[in-house]
Amino acid sequence: MKKFINSADDFLKESLQGFGAAHKDIVTCYYNPNFIIRSKYAKKGKVALITGGGSGHEPMHGGFVGYGMLDAACPGFVFSSPSPDQMIAAIEKVDCGSGVLFIVKNYSGDIMNFQMAAEMMTGPSETVLTNDDVAVENSSFTTGRRGVAATIIVEKIVGSLAESGGSLVECKNLGNKVNKNSGSMGVAFSSCIVPAAGKPTFELRSDEMEFGVGIHGEPGRRRDKIKSAKEITNELLNAILEDLKPENKDDILLFVNGMGGTPISELYLIYDNARKMLDNKKIKIARSLVGNYCTSLEMQGASITITKLDQELVNHWDTPVHTAGMRWGM
Picture 1 (cartoon, rainbow, N blue to C red):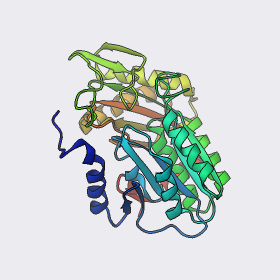
Picture 2: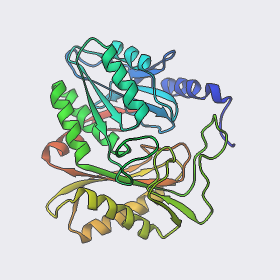
Picture 3: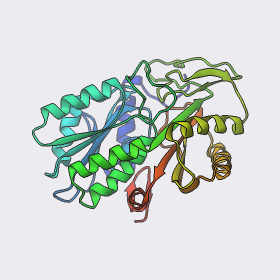
Picture 4: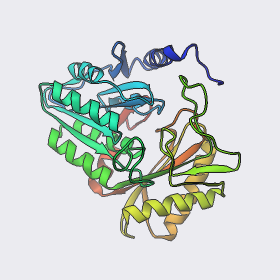
């Protein structure tokens, strides 16, 4: 195992310490239990947005804590769900009196622990469950579709509404709308290595890829021989379009996401292939996002997310945001 690491046991804490020190103008990190909040508290009466999940997907989620997005994020150990005590500690810091919205990816451990936190807290709460992965309907981690990169789209758009004074129910409804209008699929050329395991999660031959892979390395639709970027892009897009069924008049957000080990130049090549395919189908790309946002440690791979847009979603996407992992308009 070749990693910048001192010990597997201290990996998360040391990473959080570095993150907090590097971005102390945006976030404050707490330990025992671990959670991340905005360094500047939101205004009184704002709905608090809290999320979390296993570490290893950075910048998701801690990198999206800040103005215009999340109020708090609870990082579990690598690929392990955060605990309810982390969530309760975060709630105590960021609850501004108008309730808490949990944004939860559809993984069994995340769902169970966020439900426990909701039952333990005294104030009102609602949950948006993301399940945008069109690759498989069920996996070893989920009942139903997995929550993957579209979670970030939900966090940005709902974060804008919460920042502008939206109510708890309004934020939940908007989050559900974004999730319903989003589809994602990924492909991997290599596995990642969880520090505590010290070896690849799965094995791929030099000429193989996992098509429809999950962000923890869960199997996808099939294992196949590596194809050209154009062929891979077309297959990913066709699966998403078949699920979302956008019409020619629909505007979309096209999001090409890196899994952690793919050069940004290759992500832009995928974007170009996707753009040409969508142009041929008369589907208009109104907004774009390209980069490493929902990763899987050092996995070499990428995913594509499409979100169908209307003017409400575009308006909230365009509003200012200032986080470690996403910022514009400030």
